[in-house]
Amino acid sequence: MDARVKPGHDDRNGRRMSHFIVPLPDPAACDAERVGPKAANLARLGHAGLPTPGGFCIAADAYHRQIGHLGIADAVRAYADADQTTQRRLSVEIRLALYQGELAPDLRADILAAWSQQQKPAAVRSSALVEDRADSSFAGQFESFLGLAEENEFFTALRACWAALWTTNARRQMAEHDLDPSATAMAVLVQPLIAAHASGGGLSETAEGHMLISATWGLGSTIAQGEVVPDRIVLSRQGFVRSNDAGRKNHRESCVHGAAGGTAAQAVPENLARAPCLTGGQATALGRLMRKAETVLGMPVEIEWALDDGGFKLLQARPLRVRAAEVPDEIWLNHPGLNGHPAGIGWGSGRAVVVNCECELSRVAPGDILVTRVAGPALSHILPRVGGVVAELGGSTSHLASLARERGIPAVLGVLDATQHIPDGAQVAVDGVAGIVRWRT
Image (cartoon, rainbow, N blue to C red; front, side, top):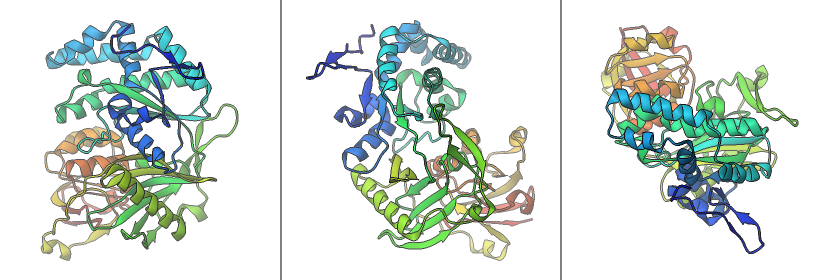
């Protein structure tokens, strides 16, 4: 057995307690070095009395135990000092082993015992030790699975979360922060899936000194992946609603009820697609929860939330870096502009490159402004070289927006027909605070 793993022990009632499994109500769940910042932040919110789904975490010790059981510890240790070609080979070898290998018997028994008591359908999310920190959110770079009910699909999701630490995108992102996967570990968060009427994200502070809520119908995955234009609700720091602009929410991801559980995409009725998801009173209540989360974590926060029959639940809270707005060159004010959701930082300008397919991303040169339709986290690998991002879908709390803020890249998402209005090759200015993009040919 791995030396870092402590054997199970009995509690006062004679029940076997596992070192691999940490229920979120347990004080140990606040230890970010054991369960990852994502799970630890959520546990801290729950312990402070804020509404969360609960659940349990499969600690980083389980990842280390599985690495030892699979006999790939030497490959993991060799990664840091290997050349680039060898690192690619090792990462594939490790990832395949984590995907395909049988779980260590003691590990499987403990995890299965926790899973058997878990309310289903469930959500299974990565909680890497490197993510959701003040300087590295890794938003959308690992794995999340929604609507799991069967044992086999649960263990498949668990293996995928472990293996996600070794994907090309994750390794590239870690390298930008002088990190590597061999020096960290992956914990996994398991929670009941909220049967949400509406979901979204929120920023407890913006560059303009307000609070911001994004909302859509159903589950929040459509916002995170940049698949819809969510409602945009601006509140004062005191919690008063300043505006509630309905988005374009043509489809939603919803829970599928029944023994099998799961989720399914559904069309949104036309009368709801452009109707606000939250009332003013609900937005104010959520604003208060954001401020309380800010107090618990001691800093501005970005949250994910869901609203079901029982009220609001906070699904995630990560540190939010807020930067002062920059003043654009006034000459741009005389040029045509389009409005959208401010989703980055500051202001920037450059050559517009209109991309309608991933195969065209090679045309984007350093400093260019990427103009595209879908603003999903899959575009994260191009962020280091762009001067700004404009997209027709997405909102201020999508995963790509989080990554843009982290890198200081101006972005405006949810810009209607941007790829049709902005000429390819035009000079473009992106105001990531006001949410305006202007161009001149």
